Amino acid sequence: MSFAETTLLGAIAGITIYLGLPVGRVQRIDERLRVGLAMFSAGILAFIFMDVSSHGESIIEGTLERFKHGHTSFGHVVWLFALLAAGFITGTAGIAGVERTLMRRRRLSAPPIAGGAVGSLAAEDTTRLHTEGALARANALRTGMTIAVAIGLHNFAEGLAIGVSARAGAIGLATMLIIGFALHNATEGFGIVGPLGGVRPSWRWLALAGLVGGGPTLLGSMIGYQVDSGPLELLFYALAGGAILYVIGEIWGAMRRYGHRELGLSLLATGFLLGVATDLVVSYGGA
Image 1 (cartoon, rainbow, N blue to C red):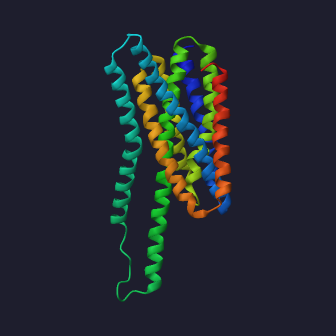
Image 2: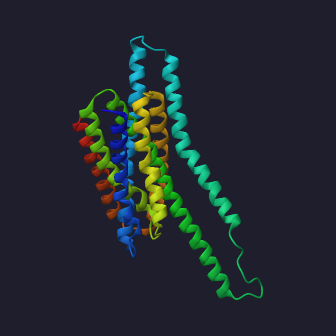
Image 3: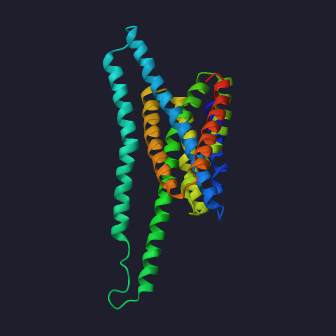
């Protein structure tokens, strides 16, 4: 398989993320559907977290096995574990710190409440509600884009697998990887827009979120065709895992106030199982 063919198929595998994104434009979503969609997306993210964690661990286990047989040093094992830890901490605590800083700056830059001692209470309330609504919308869109970034990191590592397989001449495996990742990426669009709640994103925002989430599949397949780097793949798995764990916690905290616990948990399980089902397509190809 040539580099051009690998690039084209990597693009196809990544572009399917746009299939689920238009759901974010649907208006008048009732509370139960909102909770269900958000928890469904959390289920998909939970599967991705399990997937990236197992892939990252397998890279370290492989190195540990080589150390066991005297083919590498213990320092190499420690270095890979340190890389995993650094990526995971950056993906969780790092994102949390950035979010907190952005929210603090937004509050400080928010317009003052109009009126003062001579202003009317109605004017103050209107301004306050408008400011709170703008902050809530910005926070929801920022959470959605954070999910897109986390998914993009995961998809970059998947793209590396496509590129490496294609370069090695394993056309059957590369083809099954592309089909499996394309099906899996189709569900990831729901993962991005599910937690937005009542916020209706613009088409421009959806286009950017799709590019951030799906574009790295193409980029990874191009790099994987040229470079095979276990540490690079491990780093992106670690970053993705940390970011996804952070986002799942955010979704869970946001949805608790709506109630509908049984519905939410049922849809969470459904999203997780759908992730497993699409991943089985990849496993069937021998990945």
